[in-house]
Amino acid sequence: MVKKAVLFVIIIVIAYTVVSITTGSPIERVQFRSNVTDYLHKTYTMNWKIDSIDYDFKNDKFIANVISDSGISFLVDEDYYRQMMDNYASSVWRDELKKAVTQKTKEVTGSDAEVIINVSHMGRDALTYHDEVPSYSKVSQKLSSEASICIKGNFSATHYLQEMLEIKQWIVEKKYDASLTFKPKDKDVYFYLPTEDLKKIKKPEDLNPYRLQIN
Image 1 (spheres, one colour):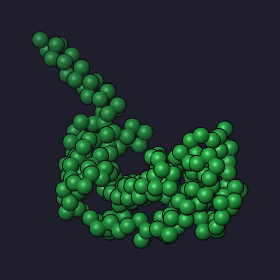
Image 2 (tube, helix red, strand yellow; image 1 turned 90 degrees about the horizontal axis):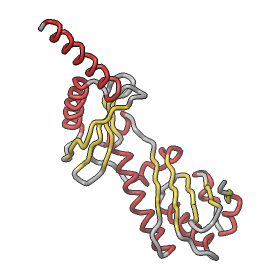
Image 3 (tube, helix red, strand yellow; image 1 turned 135 degrees about the vertical axis):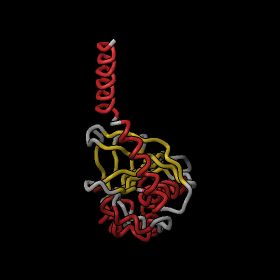
């Protein structure tokens, strides 16, 4: 009986160790969820729910996937000093840019487009916004080096440069500063426009130096 009890304990210990290595310690997972809950209650007044808790094996830490009452999905995790941080602000900006750029591209090209937005901004300085995240246009000058807009669309076979120029000009006018990539779906080229060059491009032919071949 004693041997069976010892064997059972050994099996439990081994199973717990394997689970902890592959998906994180169950006890630490529960504690992390509790810490995230406390953090969100203190940081935001909006309604939210924790959708899932994932384990980052490479960095040996947990990450919470959270959804706000407005449908914004964002992440909460711990920094190097074990302090909570989230990317709610950058998630709001990505959602804002994606909706606006998608709509504008459809107006210009007459068809739907795939728009990929990246705003790499996750840190404690973003928490000063709390629930009141400003429009991206208000902070784009500060974040433009960390932001990108990629548009994969059905551009005109003959007037695609003019359509791209129109979208580019609109982005400049809206102050949605970010590097800009156009990928016509029916061509083997794409156009990459660095943020600092957006205002220099005035005519359709000005886009030609930014034409790159798809390998």
